Image 1 (cartoon, rainbow, N blue to C red):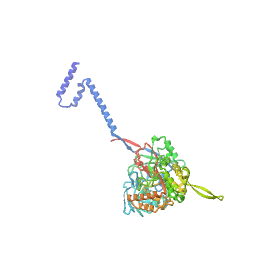
Image 2 (cartoon, helix red, strand yellow):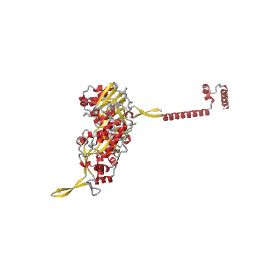
Image 3 (cartoon, rainbow, N blue to C red):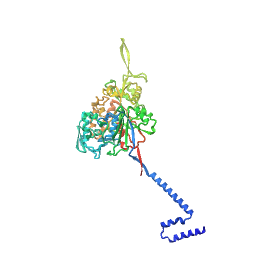
Image 4 (cartoon, one colour):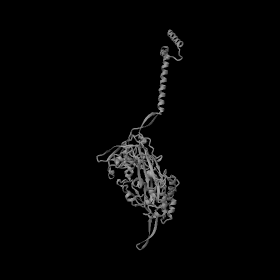
Length: 595
């Protein structure tokens, strides 16, 4: 043992004295195991093993802290819709939510609505407007193409607008482009000339554009029958792939695939499949049974059926719908008395109506122009519930009551059997409403609140299928509870200008005020936002003063979608199809990358 140790020491001394390097060479390192005794070799092994473990841990920590998950292309999403596709064509799609949903994904317009930035160019690249605000020159994106790969040209825009204007096509959008002349200046430039300035004009150019080469050979009268209405070629983020039918020929599913050449950027979700149901009950059942992953609409009274909510997210964007109670003073002369209308308004509690009709998912309204729109006035006069003031106003009329709980009545003398007798004419109005749960609940709440002021309401529900033809069109109502839909532009002309009293106008209160007409006309003739705001605020002040209607609430829209779908930003919508406004940013697949 002593001899071995002496030999080791000698070798170490020789190595130290003969080395010509401050750091050991590779040959010297190779001799190290022979120099070290077993205890030292064990220490080195342990040290090296520990160092390797530390290195592995450090590497693992680095990978974990410096890797991130990002969206990746791929995946599927299946959604249920109410109805069935018939005319997936921008010329006709606005008459059906299903057609409009599919058309929004397949087609694109010159402009589009962005919830964060408002109206912005879509197929359009840039545009110019002349000083007289009658001529718009629009340049089309250079790299925008149809789903079949051909470039989008000015002649496609000209064809689409002229087809809308052509009565043979029977497009419901014809009146939108009345008096508009459209022409192509070159392959990528189109020009619109208006007969007079029209501030909301650019918002009309959100209509989807058709490929002229594909549609030109189809006779206009046959356009609604063309197979292209179900197998469309567009330029939007998704393109048609296939549809399936049942034994009766009904379309059961409709599949779209991502457009990899989409000019903004290709969508991330690979395929969208839509399935079709007859009503909201059937749709919610399909969602509950996982036959679909999302539902285009869920009414609040059916939300409690969704027991699998952990896999579903309910989104509630604000809509541009205004739920309003209209007075028809022509059909009910008592409503000509401003005291009667004002007392009615003072009897209502909007929040209670919202709670009962929408489970609280809505916003009280006091004027027709919504928050975020040109002309919105947060300081407009607000007639909130005040039963004392309501009863004081009604006490000034002929309709009295002797106890706080009875319905008001006018007492008159009537001769009967040769004797004068007292006859009690109660203060009663008929409230017409579409026979749908939300509106029935709202009407019942209004009925109870009005009774607190001594007003009796008889609710007259009308089936949705006949509501327009039997109630709206002939103006056959005393009081009307309904929703009105604002467009992308806040222009209230269609609802309140005196020229819109008769059908197809939408002045449902039959309201006539020449000063209001002037404000609405002048606001339409300028694109100056400040001037338009002043005109619209003046209009609303007159409207609130005259009280031809009571603005009640702005509802939300309940959209159900699988929690597997990410990056959905849905704050506001004008039509249900607006839920797809940024669908190219949705994703279901992810991948790991280094930061």
